[in-house]
Image (cartoon, rainbow, N blue to C red; front, side, top):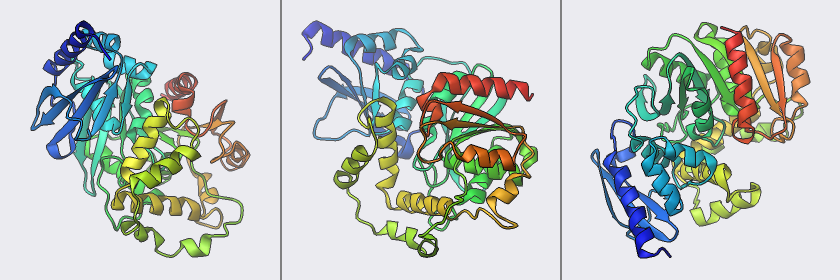
Length: 393
């Protein structure tokens, strides 16, 4: 527990933060939220409603929408430096749980920064869906597309690393994060590619560099094939690729099974322990936050349908034939770089030799990491992206 003086310092720091609250920087779903701020056992709730924010003592009987936890010294640092919140988050001194969209949005909204290029969260209405985005920086646009079960938050390190030279935009694909989750959507690579071009149209972006991880990488490849004039360069981080081996479940998965997600009973107390057993380090740092992001969507009926449909389409992606993935890949004319993880068990490094045969002009980078290079090896990943994009301009 905190002594009286330390507790007073912590609450003063938190009150200072809230006085800087800028409603134009945060996008609050539904217009209201309860964000709990903890400091070594003491806690306060920030209630956001209709564009305003106020601090109250934590109401323990009511669960918060988002939880931010740090020691009192870190809260004082955050209050004293307008850049302190995001720095503390990246350094692991500040933990954000339950909802990264709200938690990081709160840090951005209380940073005190007024530069038009500052980090901000928005909802963008496109022709097909309303998409949730985060963006920062100025310059040539660079769009980041997350993987299956992920959200735009998986690209927060990329936004921080590249916003000094680029207008970096990370989106929640339809079906994920805070974006719309239509029941009847295809949730395949062409659908996601069109979602990205729809966002570009809404933001009046003619062309952009596109960075995609996993499922987002597959969507980025499809975008490059369907609308090459919209893509300045492609950076593909462990992209999902069509299977070359037998797919024993192909016939079964051609049935409309994902709709069962609408009626599937999935309480959090069942799903969360399973995720934490499957994923190493699921209670630490970015991994813990990523698990929270996955569960936040998966525990909703529409989120489950989107996840199952997208996963099924990755599995059913046809590898060969006139319209097969590996046949079409050779037509990709964009300046393209693949970044592979040597420890990636989902898209193994062995895929690289198949890409080299189909697309010999592409560049390749190998890193000592798994499936999410921008989180696991951020410095090497972002240095490679920066160099590659600059070379293609």
